[in-house]
Image (tube, rainbow, N blue to C red; front, side, top):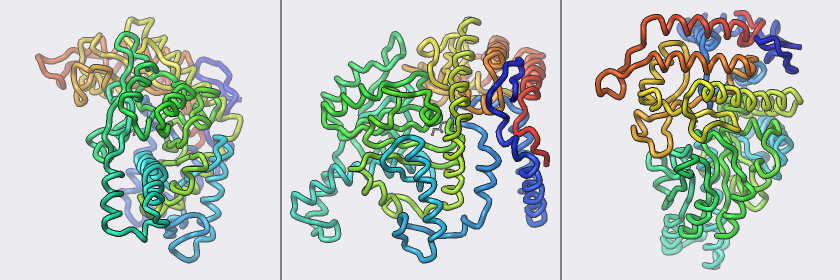
Length: 489
Ligand code: DSN
C-alpha cells in the first residue's frame, strides 16, 4: 500500500507500479528506435517526461495517463482507415478495428450505465459537434423529411433542401455563459457552435456565483431552445441534472450534458443520483483525457432515440477514426472500472476541498466561496493582479495553472481576473489533503509577493527570492509524490 507525503495511507498503488519494470524496458527500446531516425523527437519526448515530473501541474483539464494507456497508442492500429461504424466500414479489413471499437464502447456503456456509446470523436469539440448534428438530425431533419413525405435525405429536391437548410439554420441553443464557466463549444462566437445556432446563455447568481436554476428555467421558457446544454470547464460546483432535465422537458428541449471536466468523478461514483448526468441527459459528451485519465480524445453517450444519428458521426462530421486511440480509450475505461479508480476520484474531490480551504484560510477570495468538484477558481483581484499577471508569476515559480474569466470579469476574456486550479493530475501522483494545503500556501506566497507594473495588465514584478523559495518547496512535494515511480529511461 502506498502513502502520501504526509504519511497518510492511500489504497491505490502509484499508477502503473505493478508493471513499471516492463514499461521501462518498453520505453527505453521505443526511444532508442526513435532516436535512430530523428534524435530531436526522442530528446523532446524524454525532456517532456522530465518537465512533467518536475512541475506542479494544476491545470484542471490535464492529468497523467497510465503507461498502459500510453503504450497502447504506439501501435500499427494507427495504420488502418476505418471510416464508418462497427460492422459497416467504407474500407475492407477492419475486423480488428471493429473489435477495438466494440470493446471500448462496451466499457463505456458499462462504466457509465449508458444504453449507447460512441468512442470515435477525436476531441471534446468533435464530440460536441457530432452531438449537435445528431440532435439536429433527429429533432429537425427527420421530422421535416417526414412532413415532406420524403424517406431519405438522398431523395430531397433542391426546394426541399432549401426548406431544410432554413429549418436547420434557425435552431436555438441555451448554454452556460463563458464567464460563468461555460465552454466555447456551448454556442460562442469563436466556435462553429456560435455560428450554427441562435445562442443565448445563462449565468450564475451575482451574489453567490452559484447556478440559479430558476433563472435557467426562466431563460428556457422565454428562449425555447432546441438544445439546453449543461456542463462547464470552469465552474467549481456540482450541477443537479435532474433539475436541468425538468427544465428541458418543460420547454421541449433536448438536454445535452458536456461532462468533459468531471467525467472521472462520474466514473468514480463521486457524482451519483441527480449529479450523475448520464441517466438524465438525452446526450452526454466528454473528453477522455481530463479527470477520466485516458488518452486525448472524445466520447459520446446517448439515449436510444439519438443513437442512430450519433453513430453516423463519421463521415458526417468526423474524419476517419483513430483506432490506436480507441484502443487506448478501451484500456483507460477498463482501468476506470477498477475499485482503485473510485478511490482516486474521491481523493480528487477531497483534495480540491483541501486546496479551497487552504486558500480561504489564508484570506484569498474564491468564486462561489469554495468547491465541491475538482476545480478551484481564485479571484486574483484580491491580490491586486490580473489573471495574466498571476499566471505568469506562478509559472515563474514553477506552478503551472491557467488564467480564467470570473463572472462579470472586469479584465475581459484575455487578461481575466481568475486563476483556475484543478486537482486530477497531482492526485494521480499521490498528493493528499496536506500536500494541497501546502500548495495553497505556496500559491498565496507567490501572489502576495507579485506586484503589477504601472497600469499594465500583463507586466509584473516578483519579489526577490520568491521564485527560488517556492520552487524548492514544490520540489520537495514533487519528490515525495513521484510521477511514474519505477519508470526509468
Ligand atoms: N481546454 C479545456 C480546458 O482547459 O478546460 C476545455 O476544452
